[in-house]
Image (cartoon, rainbow over all chains, first blue to last red; front, top):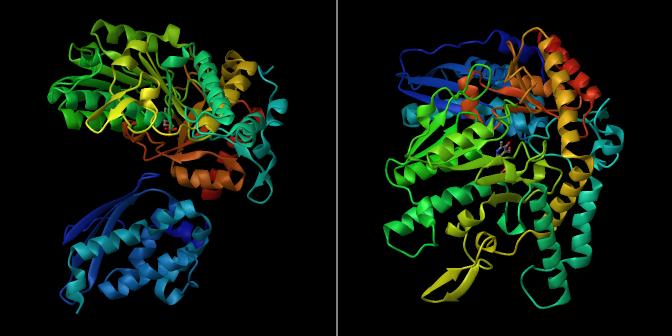
Length: 142
Length: 426
Ligand SMILES: Cc1ncc(COP(=O)(O)O)c(C=O)c1O
């Protein structure tokens, strides 16, 4: 489960740190283990969504947040949501991992074998979706 | 020399023969969450279903009689284990429900009093007024915290709490927490996260001095040490069967005779009534008043057998055995650079729950590496989130020891933590 790519993101997270410009902020927790993320989004004029975050928690939740930042920062809602849905399907073992959609996120495939950890891997991505919806990103994208 | 013959105890636990994660020996260090069950308990439950199964306290046939006998005999035996009378022992689903049963006695008495409805004699003790106080501690399991938070929200009472020292013990320096407004003091006997065993005698004296009742959450004490309610001085004792070799689905509430008699019911329905008409109903005497519906007879029989098993070992020996493992585990873990024990490092007045954090690594990751090595521990906040906040840790890794663990298991834990450090390079 702990592939090099994941450990790399965990030790050197990308994009960690909150931006002061944002349209919405969410705080998601994994109540069984105390992983936490605060995530902010700003919807830009062209419908793209700028994301920033701060978090604490296990290696999987932290690496996954870093990968999320790499993958979907500055995507519009539809494109970002496609990645979220693909990650969910992959962790439910319903699709083969697609590197074009998830980038380094395909390394999270091993998490699917550990049901207790799936929430850790999804935490940042679900926070992104929640924040984007609250910021009205769905309406903006058209 | 250990106080227990662990090898022969282990032979009684079928699950300890299985392997986990690529054929590794199962090192089960999560008995604080739930214990494993010896075949004697499994057989007792099975025997009930195979030979005596019927709905207890109902029906006039022979099976119903046998089932009722088995159920009530179990009640008497379990009550005896904590030095109590059978009629003062109520069966619940688990400790959580037992604590809610008491918190709802307060709520229901308060609601009925407000509407001048009839209440049992003595129920005034359970009527709360705005400004009354409930006192808990900062080390409570959520099961002994949320019910009181809810009760206070609904009645206008105020929740206060005893804080914790840096060493992981109750900070009893602020005696002003006990006031004439304090109606109930609810606290744990042994913290499920810190391992701290609280000085109940001192709490009881302070509570009695202001006329407050005391509820003791004994989830982590009844399974691990001798507990005798005739000596403790508390008013209520609650615990779960599944943490003491018994089946899932059965918990216990012991209460003083006159207090149980004064409490309005919690869950209502069949079995708990005296008379029923369309205009209204009256309720049975305890313990039946608090046992609505067909009860968990097979589980009571299983728990009664668990009690016999522990009695044969001797609770003093159980406590001594766990103490030896606790001392070894604390020493072993403290010998690892970067490990910090959350809870007392001095093993006196301390049970076998050993929580720790490892610098630079979240407990989930520690737990995962231990799991790869066949070691089952619990990670997270252990349903005691305020304790994690108090010590400013997001979560801990917790090992808990029981009668079937030995020093080999302690060594496996320590080696496993070394392996986690090495793997993550911390
Ligand atoms: C100290 C303490 N109190 C209460 C509980 C709740 O027990 P149950 O979940 O069986 O109701 C537990 C169990 O984890 C506990 O350790």
